[in-house]
Length: 138
Image (cartoon, rainbow, N blue to C red; front, side):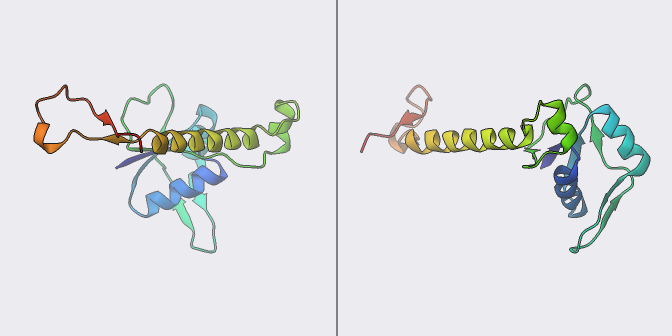
């Protein structure tokens, strides 16, 4: 399965490098400035669990992104740097983005469990419209 990691900062770089070291097909979606940094110095993870050195990590920019991916990792930190907070008028954008994603995920899970579906019964399979029907209310 192809994996796209959005960003190669501290968190995305760590998890993407670990996945690459485990033999997974990973591509980093990065901005041009970060891509130049990674092309120059590579991606290095130093950890008590073992270091990973990727001299040429697989990179993509938004303009050249045309492939399909089975998994897209969007990882944001909970604490932003002073530069990020200054740019966002003192608001911790990373924190609010992360919280927004958690709320969205919770709503999607609630919807998935609240609106169960039931496949067409085997005795009528092929005779109906092909739609998946809602399960009867209990």
